[in-house]
Amino acid sequence: MRYAAIDIGSNAVRLLIADIIENNGSVSFKKNTLIRVPLRLGDDAFLDKRLSDKKIADLVKTMQAFGKLMEVYKVVDYMAYATSAMREAKNGAEVVAQIKIDAGVDLEIVHGQKEAGMIYASHPDQTIDKSKNYLYIDVGGGSTELSFFSSGEMWASKSFNIGTIRMLDNQDTEETWNDMKEFIRDNTKQFKLISGIGTGGNINKLYKLSEEKDKAPLSFGKLKSLYSYLTSFSLKDRINVLGLNQDRADVIIPACEIYLTVMKWANIKNIYVPTVGLVDGIIQTLIEKNFPKAG
Image (cartoon, rainbow, N blue to C red; front, side, top):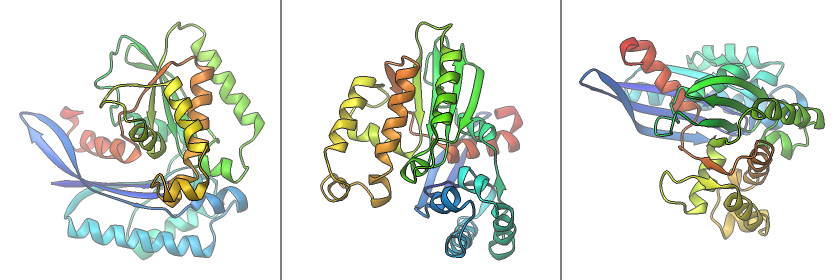
């Protein structure tokens, strides 16, 4: 049996097809196929507040392809979520309706809080000590989701319009940065020690570049050194010398800046990188919907 998850982000659109594994009453999943298409919807949404005809056409074609792939893989259930770019696009609802008609895919535009909860549904903390305090940091193209956890329980969560594409387009505001700083300080002052949990394509790539041992946290110092190393290369050389994808080579710099800033404000010395994201959370949510006792 297979489930699928579609994440329509500000930088890229992803399809994850997962094999569902039932074993002695427990249900888990194994990633089968992951496809990523760098559509950069955020460039339109953040600058023009609407998606252009070209972006819409590309998105519809991508959803048609994803729909056909789900048929071929015999997917029995799926969820498709759109995040920051589609939230901001004034014609977002029209695009959702067009995708339903032209691609047969049911798509939901989710608010930041639901996005944060859905990402956390991937259970990135399952191998982490629940007696400690964590700040969950998910950096996307259009928004950053922050969630504080203590003793395994969430006590605060908020989405901010600060993201990599938004920063590249100079659409992030000082006011939003100040709001994020205040939120972090308000929720860290009662704790002496907080560790980070980072999710998203950029922190996953940064973790690989750091060559840390599997499951070992990435230190603030190591991340700062990595940032200095990456910024010493031109965009062209980050692609040709370091081998980064073209749509990763530019956003990885503002992503690094966001993670470093959040870690500095929260006085976080180490960040764990469980290499999961929204699509993983969607699959886990589908499991909990269809196998309530296994959730």
